[in-house]
Image (cartoon, rainbow, N blue to C red; front, side, top):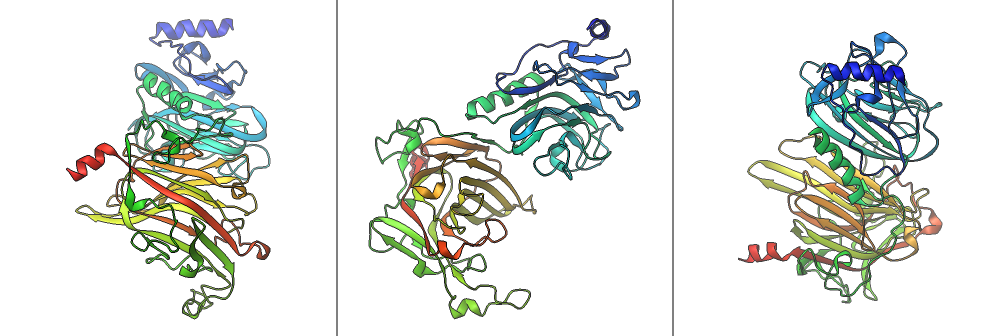
Amino acid sequence: MIRVMLITHALAALGYSQQTQGPPSTDGLQLWLDASDVQTVVAGKDGAVEEWLDKSGNGHHATQDEAARRPRLVPNAMNEMPVVRFGGRAHLNLEEIRGKEGVATAFVVSQRSEEQATGGRWQRLVSSFPPGCENDLKPPAFCFVANKGRSGDAYGAVVDDSTYVNVRIGPLTIGKAGHANAQFFQGDIAELLVYDRGFLTEDAYQSVLVYLSEKWGARISRTNTGWTRVGGLGETPQRVTDDLPLSDQQNQGDWIKYGPLSDEFHGPELDETKWWDYNPTWKGRPPSPFLPRNVTTENGELTLTMRKEPVPEEFAKIEGPDGEPLFHSYTSASVKSKTTVRYGYFEVEARPMHSAGSSSFWFSGRYVDDEGMHRTEIDVFEIGGAALGFERKCNMNLHVFETPKEKRHWSVGGKWLSPWDLADDYHVYGLEWGEESIKYYVDGVLVRSVKNTDWHYPLHMLFDSETMPNWLGMPRDEDLPSTYRIRYVRAWKEQSEVQERDG
């Protein structure tokens, strides 16, 4: 430690500042590397970093024994504070932190100047590569890619974040891929936090992002994957009135019921003024077509049923690229709204079907304006109630298929793991779709939140069941027929928006 103090004093004389501000949450914090605290960076007079000391108290220090591969400590490089600068083949190594698979959450602050830009793609900020893995892209390994894997262009100070499931933590490499001498990072790392857990509340998660953003003057990544709850729901809110969302019974959101997309399904038939009992723009996901006869209203519920049966002739004659029938053996169901909506709160009480057929609640559509085509999708949930390994996964996703500026398909997904099988009972699922954020609820408890970067155009509301052989697997014969049941759908708009619209 005497050597560290001598080096620290020398660096301070050269103009390196020292910061001691800590993260708002230290529960489960396994690794904390902070370049602003020069007492933790063991570097020579030339700034070459031999060791970056872990401030978490766990002794997980990052080291580099080879002098030629050491990054450098650079003063006043980000918000007037030091950073550790990586270039060439420089990197740091850490031993294993957790050998057992589980959840991990990581936050990293980085930047790349024009001088550092090399054009190399997939540059690794952090790579966790346990023994026996083929690469760091699949669990139990994981990696953090600079600039989200795009080109090695310059970018300003940014906070990136991600939560991983079923991963081990370490051995870790900072500045390159752990499994190869490749994907070397060219740029600066200011701070790195790694937790051996997820975050139960969005506020706690956001507090870490805000701490890093404010400390380093860094933006929070536009493409961050959002927060997803880890663990059970805890105490759930009690229903006082059906006139408001379960999560907001005090109406802090100033909600007013939106009739065109609300339905209690009490009638003997589906309300044809509101819904199609099929999807007029999509026949279904092969091998199962959507059939109107699989949609009913009974006992105050909307039901969508999947069956093992021959498909109607009109579908049987449709051939795939290989000349074989595209639709066969199964039929399923879809319901689509006749009106579109933008923003609001949407809630259903539903019980997914007990089969590997999906039970889904989602929004989709195309919108053309003066700029061009906007084609996006919001998946409130996609559940495979009896799909092996999916029985407790509430899959939530956001898709962008096309915008005037974006021609590639990309998505931002999250999975909340329920403590119970989702098909065993009815639960309340909610979506709060706002201009700034998109939030998902189960039984009135927030389970996921994502920035709204691209979902600003009207979409249709849909319910459906699909065969998804490449994801959920095909349903077992003994599970069919199987029925997805929805007791109600309720929609609300902000009262100020309705008043502005109605003038």
